[in-house]
Image (tube, rainbow, N blue to C red; front, side, top):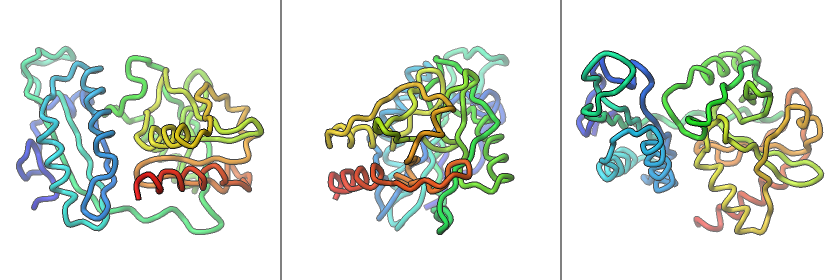
Length: 271
């Protein structure tokens, strides 16, 4: 089978008038696949459907999309499958859609990337790139990712594995490709995402696991000044799962107790 399907057919090209290309008018999901099965697929499709409703994007072929994701995952020991849904090829020029555009779906399989660096450990820096605040788009995994592109260019120059990004309001939001959980003397907390940022699938899995285990996670605004008082940080995305951070902006972090406990809860629930 081809590693890329466009509207269910093998291919590598889309119409140059596609609104995903022209305006970033669409959404995407990156799905971890192991032993031939996509992980957390129901949660990915729920988030995608929620995003379509928020953007008033008239995509309805979720069962076809599910089947294509499963087909590309089948037979693979480990891979990533990326699903993109756009509003489709424009039927007139301009930002405003007409409403008769047939949505485009693109599903592609990608090799599993190499793991983060070995000891002395995972290094998390701070990005100078800020995230614009827009509650209408907050939480969605939409196609407009130039802020993350710039942040990752800076990450590579700084020689760290990931960078934390702040909003223009000065609050910590998350990593350039991850959500963040932090622990201080009062316990575990994670940024709230009502103004910007992506509400990741693994973030949801961790919050639900913590609730099952009776461990409170405070979801609240996080000021940059708080970073100096944390003793544990871990990041979440579907590739890393729960990635403990050993170095935060050059400072060693000694603990990973919360991450180890929550990994065990998640593993036990999906054994």
